[in-house]
Length: 276
Image (cartoon, rainbow, N blue to C red; front, side, top):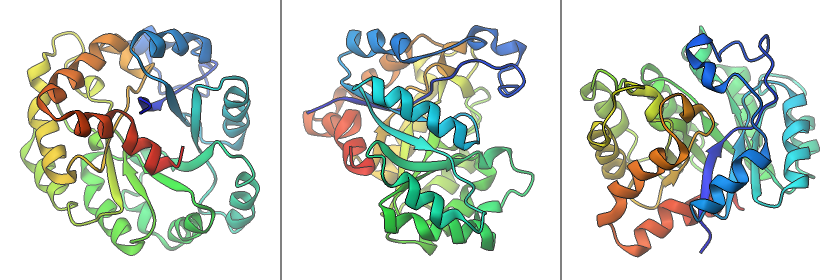
């Protein structure tokens, strides 16, 4: 069974476009391209990856489709379209021709309107995805988890996945409220979760593997082993951990699970979710 990194990024660094990569993140203020990731996947016995948009433009889709066309280890793309556009159906129809375009994402975490995902125009866009077999990645902060549950409930046949366990405050070990909001999502069988992006929410210089245990416990208890996906969030993870260190956190945690459960988490669930 293939092992898949279900969440990583490629970019040609542009300080204006990529202004979210600030001076604190100087480590990643440079280009990261497929030849940079390929050896890391090989060293860690991973067979492929899903690249996720980091710029909200259709130019980003062209860039990632070009990468995926040149490198077979890129198994899928999560791109971006304007879901609130009246022409969203036409854009989805257009992207349906590209076999590696698997789904879409919007940077909801950065929106002033915290409930943007429930607004009529956005809902209209979401309603068009299933016809084309597209997934939707939900990128949010914990204060938006309640809206994610409403979204999943409104479209029970649409596949959704929460990115980065919804970015809890791991640095200050704030668990309780996040845990309650995560647990409320358990009943939505169309909603998955990526165990990814954790190191960047921890103390970058002083985290320990134990810091992440209560968070992973909550995710596994809530989603079970059929609805969780491994993602590195490379190269963003590099501000706090190497690829190897990030992988060791989850490998260690899942070492007591069955072979079958590990197979699901490290690949099978991603293959099924994204139809790789």
